Length: 345
Image (cartoon, rainbow, N blue to C red; front, side):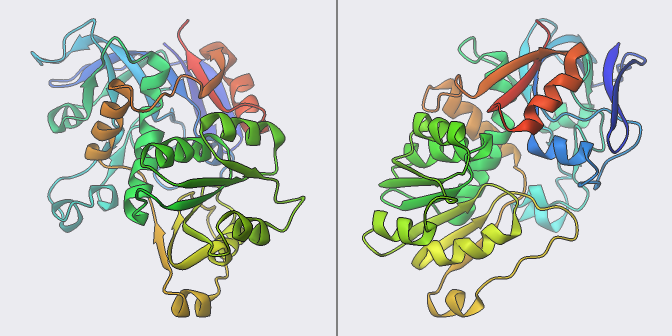
Protein backbone atom coordinates (compact mmCIF):
# COMPACT_ATOMS: atom_id res chain seq x y z
CA UNK A 1 0.00 0.00 0.00
CA UNK A 2 0.95 3.66 -0.29
CA UNK A 3 1.60 5.50 2.97
CA UNK A 4 3.09 8.78 4.12
CA UNK A 5 5.96 7.51 6.25
CA UNK A 6 7.56 9.71 8.89
CA UNK A 7 11.24 8.76 8.86
CA UNK A 8 12.45 11.59 11.14
CA UNK A 9 11.44 15.13 12.07
CA UNK A 10 10.96 17.16 8.87
CA UNK A 11 11.19 13.97 6.79
CA UNK A 12 7.84 12.49 5.73
CA UNK A 13 7.66 10.81 2.32
CA UNK A 14 5.11 8.89 0.32
CA UNK A 15 6.34 5.30 -0.08
CA UNK A 16 5.19 1.73 -0.51
CA UNK A 17 4.98 -0.54 2.51
CA UNK A 18 3.38 -3.87 3.29
CA UNK A 19 -0.38 -3.93 3.72
CA UNK A 20 -1.45 -4.31 7.37
CA UNK A 21 -1.84 -7.92 8.50
CA UNK A 22 -5.19 -8.97 9.96
CA UNK A 23 -4.97 -10.72 13.35
CA UNK A 24 -7.89 -12.32 15.24
CA UNK A 25 -10.29 -9.64 16.42
CA UNK A 26 -8.72 -6.88 14.28
CA UNK A 27 -10.32 -4.79 11.58
CA UNK A 28 -8.69 -3.56 8.39
CA UNK A 29 -10.10 -0.31 7.01
CA UNK A 30 -9.70 1.44 3.71
CA UNK A 31 -9.06 5.00 4.85
CA UNK A 32 -11.76 7.32 3.51
CA UNK A 33 -10.68 10.64 5.04
CA UNK A 34 -7.94 11.85 7.35
CA UNK A 35 -7.74 15.43 8.58
CA UNK A 36 -4.48 17.10 9.54
CA UNK A 37 -4.24 18.12 13.19
CA UNK A 38 -2.01 20.83 14.62
CA UNK A 39 -0.43 18.04 16.65
CA UNK A 40 0.43 16.20 13.42
CA UNK A 41 2.35 19.30 12.34
CA UNK A 42 4.14 19.46 15.71
CA UNK A 43 5.09 15.77 15.33
CA UNK A 44 6.28 16.35 11.76
CA UNK A 45 8.41 19.28 12.90
CA UNK A 46 9.85 17.39 15.87
CA UNK A 47 8.18 19.58 18.48
CA UNK A 48 6.23 16.62 19.86
CA UNK A 49 7.96 13.27 20.28
CA UNK A 50 6.03 11.38 22.98
CA UNK A 51 4.78 8.08 21.59
CA UNK A 52 6.32 8.71 18.17
CA UNK A 53 8.39 6.03 16.41
CA UNK A 54 10.58 6.31 13.35
CA UNK A 55 9.72 5.18 10.79
CA UNK A 56 5.97 5.19 11.33
CA UNK A 57 2.68 6.44 9.95
CA UNK A 58 0.93 9.21 11.86
CA UNK A 59 -2.65 10.51 11.52
CA UNK A 60 -5.30 10.08 14.21
CA UNK A 61 -8.35 11.98 12.86
CA UNK A 62 -9.90 9.60 10.33
CA UNK A 63 -12.77 7.55 9.02
CA UNK A 64 -12.77 4.40 6.94
CA UNK A 65 -14.59 1.50 5.36
CA UNK A 66 -14.15 -2.00 6.75
CA UNK A 67 -12.60 -4.31 4.16
CA UNK A 68 -11.64 -7.22 6.43
CA UNK A 69 -12.74 -8.43 9.86
CA UNK A 70 -10.91 -10.76 12.19
CA UNK A 71 -14.06 -12.50 13.40
CA UNK A 72 -16.45 -9.77 14.52
CA UNK A 73 -20.12 -10.30 13.73
CA UNK A 74 -20.86 -6.63 14.38
CA UNK A 75 -18.20 -5.01 12.23
CA UNK A 76 -18.50 -6.49 8.76
CA UNK A 77 -16.94 -5.52 5.43
CA UNK A 78 -18.61 -2.58 3.71
CA UNK A 79 -19.52 -0.65 6.86
CA UNK A 80 -18.32 2.93 7.18
CA UNK A 81 -16.85 3.64 10.61
CA UNK A 82 -15.28 6.32 12.75
CA UNK A 83 -12.67 5.36 15.33
CA UNK A 84 -11.70 6.87 18.67
CA UNK A 85 -7.89 6.63 18.43
CA UNK A 86 -7.22 6.57 22.20
CA UNK A 87 -7.01 3.03 23.62
CA UNK A 88 -6.77 2.95 27.46
CA UNK A 89 -5.77 -0.03 29.57
CA UNK A 90 -9.11 0.07 31.43
CA UNK A 91 -7.57 -1.22 34.69
CA UNK A 92 -5.34 1.48 36.17
CA UNK A 93 -6.33 4.03 38.83
CA UNK A 94 -6.91 6.78 36.25
CA UNK A 95 -9.13 4.59 34.08
CA UNK A 96 -11.15 3.45 37.08
CA UNK A 97 -11.64 7.10 38.11
CA UNK A 98 -13.02 7.97 34.68
CA UNK A 99 -9.82 9.68 33.53
CA UNK A 100 -8.86 7.20 30.84
CA UNK A 101 -7.29 9.93 28.70
CA UNK A 102 -4.65 10.17 31.47
CA UNK A 103 -4.00 6.41 31.51
CA UNK A 104 -0.23 5.85 31.87
CA UNK A 105 -0.49 2.89 29.49
CA UNK A 106 -2.65 4.69 26.94
CA UNK A 107 -1.91 3.73 23.37
CA UNK A 108 -3.09 5.81 20.46
CA UNK A 109 -3.57 5.18 16.78
CA UNK A 110 -1.29 7.58 14.97
CA UNK A 111 1.33 7.40 17.74
CA UNK A 112 2.20 4.04 19.26
CA UNK A 113 0.08 2.35 16.57
CA UNK A 114 0.42 3.23 12.88
CA UNK A 115 -2.08 5.84 11.80
CA UNK A 116 -4.21 6.93 8.88
CA UNK A 117 -2.01 8.79 6.39
CA UNK A 118 -2.12 5.60 4.36
CA UNK A 119 -4.41 3.65 2.05
CA UNK A 120 -5.24 1.09 4.74
CA UNK A 121 -5.12 0.96 8.52
CA UNK A 122 -5.33 -1.85 11.08
CA UNK A 123 -7.59 -1.33 14.08
CA UNK A 124 -6.28 -3.57 16.89
CA UNK A 125 -8.57 -6.14 18.48
CA UNK A 126 -8.26 -4.32 21.81
CA UNK A 127 -9.83 -1.17 20.31
CA UNK A 128 -12.61 -3.21 18.71
CA UNK A 129 -13.27 -4.98 22.01
CA UNK A 130 -13.41 -1.70 23.97
CA UNK A 131 -15.93 -0.13 21.59
CA UNK A 132 -13.62 2.44 19.98
CA UNK A 133 -15.16 1.69 16.57
CA UNK A 134 -18.50 3.31 15.64
CA UNK A 135 -20.66 2.54 12.62
CA UNK A 136 -21.56 5.78 10.86
CA UNK A 137 -24.98 7.02 9.88
CA UNK A 138 -25.52 7.97 6.24
CA UNK A 139 -25.97 11.55 7.47
CA UNK A 140 -22.33 11.71 8.60
CA UNK A 141 -19.85 12.28 5.79
CA UNK A 142 -16.37 10.78 5.73
CA UNK A 143 -14.80 14.16 6.50
CA UNK A 144 -17.33 14.85 9.26
CA UNK A 145 -16.38 11.53 10.83
CA UNK A 146 -12.68 12.40 10.71
CA UNK A 147 -13.48 15.58 12.63
CA UNK A 148 -15.23 13.76 15.47
CA UNK A 149 -11.88 13.23 17.21
CA UNK A 150 -10.91 16.93 17.50
CA UNK A 151 -14.50 17.86 18.33
CA UNK A 152 -14.46 15.27 21.13
CA UNK A 153 -11.27 16.84 22.48
CA UNK A 154 -13.03 20.23 22.48
CA UNK A 155 -15.95 18.66 24.32
CA UNK A 156 -13.57 17.31 26.95
CA UNK A 157 -11.98 20.74 27.35
CA UNK A 158 -15.27 22.55 27.84
CA UNK A 159 -16.48 19.90 30.27
CA UNK A 160 -13.29 20.34 32.32
CA UNK A 161 -13.60 24.13 32.53
CA UNK A 162 -17.34 23.91 33.24
CA UNK A 163 -18.66 26.08 30.40
CA UNK A 164 -22.41 26.47 30.82
CA UNK A 165 -25.47 28.34 29.64
CA UNK A 166 -25.27 32.09 30.04
CA UNK A 167 -21.47 32.26 30.23
CA UNK A 168 -19.51 35.00 28.52
CA UNK A 169 -16.71 33.19 26.70
CA UNK A 170 -13.44 34.38 25.21
CA UNK A 171 -11.59 32.09 22.79
CA UNK A 172 -7.99 32.92 21.99
CA UNK A 173 -7.30 31.70 18.46
CA UNK A 174 -9.67 30.99 15.57
CA UNK A 175 -7.97 28.08 13.89
CA UNK A 176 -9.87 24.78 13.50
CA UNK A 177 -9.90 24.14 17.25
CA UNK A 178 -11.02 27.68 18.02
CA UNK A 179 -13.86 27.36 15.51
CA UNK A 180 -14.98 24.09 17.10
CA UNK A 181 -14.94 25.78 20.51
CA UNK A 182 -17.14 28.54 19.09
CA UNK A 183 -19.65 26.03 17.72
CA UNK A 184 -19.86 24.10 20.98
CA UNK A 185 -20.03 27.20 23.19
CA UNK A 186 -22.91 28.47 21.07
CA UNK A 187 -24.71 25.11 21.35
CA UNK A 188 -24.26 25.21 25.13
CA UNK A 189 -25.99 28.56 25.37
CA UNK A 190 -23.11 30.96 25.94
CA UNK A 191 -24.54 34.46 26.12
CA UNK A 192 -21.51 36.08 24.46
CA UNK A 193 -18.77 34.43 22.41
CA UNK A 194 -15.76 36.65 21.80
CA UNK A 195 -12.84 35.51 19.65
CA UNK A 196 -9.35 37.00 19.52
CA UNK A 197 -7.50 36.28 16.27
CA UNK A 198 -4.98 38.34 14.27
CA UNK A 199 -5.72 36.59 10.94
CA UNK A 200 -8.55 38.31 9.06
CA UNK A 201 -9.71 35.17 7.22
CA UNK A 202 -9.92 33.26 10.46
CA UNK A 203 -11.83 36.06 12.15
CA UNK A 204 -14.35 35.74 9.34
CA UNK A 205 -14.46 31.97 9.89
CA UNK A 206 -15.11 32.54 13.59
CA UNK A 207 -18.10 34.73 12.77
CA UNK A 208 -19.38 32.03 10.42
CA UNK A 209 -18.97 29.47 13.22
CA UNK A 210 -21.19 31.58 15.48
CA UNK A 211 -19.00 34.10 17.32
CA UNK A 212 -20.71 37.32 18.42
CA UNK A 213 -17.57 39.45 18.30
CA UNK A 214 -14.14 39.03 16.72
CA UNK A 215 -11.17 41.09 17.81
CA UNK A 216 -7.81 41.69 16.16
CA UNK A 217 -5.43 41.68 19.16
CA UNK A 218 -2.69 43.34 17.09
CA UNK A 219 -4.90 46.38 16.49
CA UNK A 220 -6.53 47.02 19.87
CA UNK A 221 -5.98 46.51 23.58
CA UNK A 222 -7.52 43.05 23.97
CA UNK A 223 -8.18 43.35 27.71
CA UNK A 224 -9.97 46.67 27.26
CA UNK A 225 -11.99 45.28 24.35
CA UNK A 226 -13.08 42.23 26.34
CA UNK A 227 -14.04 44.37 29.32
CA UNK A 228 -16.08 46.58 27.01
CA UNK A 229 -17.91 43.55 25.59
CA UNK A 230 -18.64 42.12 29.06
CA UNK A 231 -19.85 45.24 30.89
CA UNK A 232 -16.51 45.60 32.59
CA UNK A 233 -16.59 42.17 34.23
CA UNK A 234 -14.43 39.97 32.02
CA UNK A 235 -15.24 36.50 30.72
CA UNK A 236 -16.65 33.63 32.75
CA UNK A 237 -14.56 31.25 30.62
CA UNK A 238 -11.36 31.93 28.68
CA UNK A 239 -10.08 29.21 26.35
CA UNK A 240 -6.54 29.14 24.99
CA UNK A 241 -7.03 27.43 21.64
CA UNK A 242 -3.43 28.07 20.52
CA UNK A 243 -0.38 26.68 22.30
CA UNK A 244 1.46 29.96 22.91
CA UNK A 245 2.62 30.37 26.54
CA UNK A 246 2.17 34.15 26.54
CA UNK A 247 -1.54 33.65 25.83
CA UNK A 248 -1.92 31.75 29.09
CA UNK A 249 -0.71 34.80 30.99
CA UNK A 250 -2.98 37.01 28.92
CA UNK A 251 -5.97 34.79 29.67
CA UNK A 252 -5.71 35.51 33.40
CA UNK A 253 -6.29 39.20 32.72
CA UNK A 254 -9.37 38.50 30.60
CA UNK A 255 -11.25 36.39 33.14
CA UNK A 256 -14.00 37.63 35.43
CA UNK A 257 -13.77 37.05 39.18
CA UNK A 258 -14.49 33.38 39.81
CA UNK A 259 -13.94 32.59 36.14
CA UNK A 260 -12.32 29.58 34.52
CA UNK A 261 -9.32 29.40 32.20
CA UNK A 262 -8.79 26.39 29.93
CA UNK A 263 -5.24 25.72 28.76
CA UNK A 264 -6.62 23.62 25.94
CA UNK A 265 -3.91 23.70 23.30
CA UNK A 266 -0.72 21.70 23.70
CA UNK A 267 2.64 23.41 24.10
CA UNK A 268 5.99 22.35 22.72
CA UNK A 269 8.47 20.51 24.95
CA UNK A 270 10.33 22.84 27.31
CA UNK A 271 8.02 25.83 26.90
CA UNK A 272 7.16 27.62 30.14
CA UNK A 273 4.70 30.39 30.89
CA UNK A 274 4.32 33.00 33.61
CA UNK A 275 0.96 33.53 35.28
CA UNK A 276 -0.22 36.27 37.66
CA UNK A 277 -0.66 34.06 40.71
CA UNK A 278 -2.06 36.94 42.77
CA UNK A 279 -4.89 37.37 40.28
CA UNK A 280 -5.58 33.63 40.40
CA UNK A 281 -5.60 33.76 44.20
CA UNK A 282 -7.59 36.91 44.89
CA UNK A 283 -10.06 36.54 41.99
CA UNK A 284 -10.52 32.81 42.71
CA UNK A 285 -9.78 31.84 39.13
CA UNK A 286 -9.81 28.19 38.08
CA UNK A 287 -7.05 27.16 35.67
CA UNK A 288 -7.62 23.79 34.04
CA UNK A 289 -5.66 21.68 31.61
CA UNK A 290 -7.23 19.52 28.95
CA UNK A 291 -5.59 16.59 27.22
CA UNK A 292 -7.08 14.43 24.48
CA UNK A 293 -10.36 12.60 24.82
CA UNK A 294 -12.08 9.60 26.30
CA UNK A 295 -14.23 7.02 24.54
CA UNK A 296 -17.28 8.67 26.08
CA UNK A 297 -16.24 12.07 24.70
CA UNK A 298 -15.94 10.52 21.24
CA UNK A 299 -19.36 8.87 21.46
CA UNK A 300 -21.01 12.06 22.75
CA UNK A 301 -19.40 14.11 19.98
CA UNK A 302 -20.47 11.62 17.33
CA UNK A 303 -24.05 11.70 18.61
CA UNK A 304 -24.11 15.51 18.42
CA UNK A 305 -23.00 15.41 14.79
CA UNK A 306 -25.29 12.52 13.86
CA UNK A 307 -28.30 14.27 15.41
CA UNK A 308 -27.50 17.53 13.62
CA UNK A 309 -26.83 19.52 16.78
CA UNK A 310 -23.36 20.45 15.50
CA UNK A 311 -22.65 21.09 11.81
CA UNK A 312 -19.06 20.36 10.76
CA UNK A 313 -19.58 20.61 7.00
CA UNK A 314 -17.88 24.02 6.71
CA UNK A 315 -14.75 22.96 8.59
CA UNK A 316 -12.86 21.23 5.75
CA UNK A 317 -11.76 23.92 3.30
CA UNK A 318 -9.09 21.99 1.36
CA UNK A 319 -8.91 18.38 0.13
CA UNK A 320 -5.94 16.45 -1.28
CA UNK A 321 -5.20 12.92 -2.40
CA UNK A 322 -2.69 10.84 -0.48
CA UNK A 323 -0.12 11.36 -3.24
CA UNK A 324 -0.33 15.10 -2.42
CA UNK A 325 0.44 14.70 1.28
CA UNK A 326 3.37 17.14 1.16
CA UNK A 327 1.18 19.85 -0.34
CA UNK A 328 -1.56 19.05 2.17
CA UNK A 329 0.79 19.53 5.13
CA UNK A 330 2.16 22.73 3.62
CA UNK A 331 -1.35 24.12 3.29
CA UNK A 332 -2.27 23.12 6.85
CA UNK A 333 0.92 24.65 8.22
CA UNK A 334 0.47 27.89 6.27
CA UNK A 335 -2.65 28.89 8.20
CA UNK A 336 -4.45 29.70 4.94
CA UNK A 337 -6.86 26.77 5.40
CA UNK A 338 -9.31 25.91 8.14
CA UNK A 339 -9.15 22.11 8.11
CA UNK A 340 -7.21 20.13 5.48
CA UNK A 341 -8.34 16.60 4.58
CA UNK A 342 -6.64 13.79 2.72
CA UNK A 343 -9.31 11.68 1.04
CA UNK A 344 -9.46 8.64 -1.18
CA UNK A 345 -11.39 10.47 -3.93
